[in-house]
Length: 316
Image (cartoon, rainbow, N blue to C red; front, top):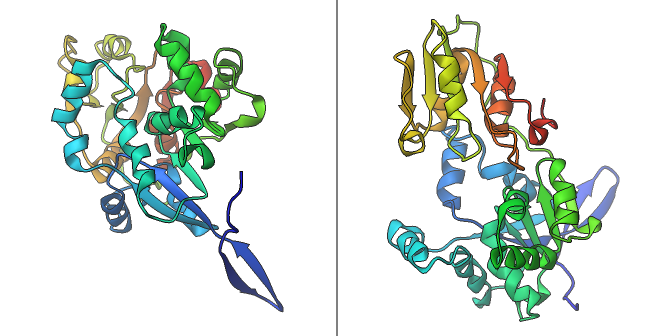
């Protein structure tokens, strides 16, 4: 693969100079990059991009974030995708943006794996420009999908995984699944521990806790059935931060308050005020459900109880 030399910036160091190559990185993302950065600067969010990706720009990366318009991200587009029963249709929007007459990136990074699926498929077909651009998939659910998907989705997922130049994952249990089930070479796999924005999720100044148990999270790996059964045996309030639709059909006891969804600052306030944070998850899932709240809770200094699960072993 031939590429033009990367541009460079010269940094002045004590008594010497050194040249640092600048890598042009394209981020496939569905979040509004400009809004997220502005809210992070204003301390309304934890960080200026998800997963600490803004730190790439502090090194030797020039970051460009591409996302489709709200029309292509909105509910109408989602219903159309569901009607077509084509779960990989959305990411084609991201990959097709590479054909724009902009400087070609040195690397493309999918901020979650499905946002790079189309690039990987086109790369597997050796189509330009996608075949010539190294692709990194930041993977959360790929190992779980590999464990549960049926043909033809499994074969499609395997092809996608093998086309990526690097798959970054957040729990070490996923390494074996990626190698043995998806057939990814070990040198294309990288475990990176999930991080926490410690400057935002900082310990609260000395105040008394609010006298409640707190939990948060909405992904399918959360075990709210078990959590609500335990809450019914407590004599104190339990606050649950979760999208209401995720809890449909469940009947929590009277001491459970369903908070709904809130912003980052109120979420931090709820962590600060809790006597204990309890995270119940289904241990059979292959991805680390709950690691974000777990790390946030530990960062603010609150006692935390979590389900014993292999994907969380890296964090407990």
